[in-house]
Image (tube, rainbow, N blue to C red; front, side, top):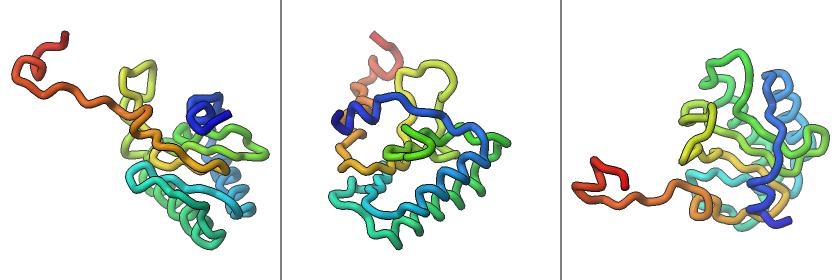
Length: 140
């Protein structure tokens, strides 16, 4: 299965904050051979060192703890809770319309994977809309 198939594949939603902490601790305890793709930055071409990985995961955890105002998690998704290899984490301040369906669902900010990433922004990000006077006010 390629990266795009994995990205669009089945994920388990981590709903409890305790489960989120456990998942992040599992990642920290197994810090080798991970790609950390912050979708707001340049896509990585190599895995991150174990020390940098632990720092990144702790930084992400701090953002979740500080910025996520809900009593449940709901912003972390993983392919396998016990043996994760692909984790999607949405920034708590950039959730867009997560309930129901959306024409342009939000992009996860962090993709933590064992497989080398591909450019999900180009593949799945919002498409450019035509910029013109008429198209600004009318949708065809």
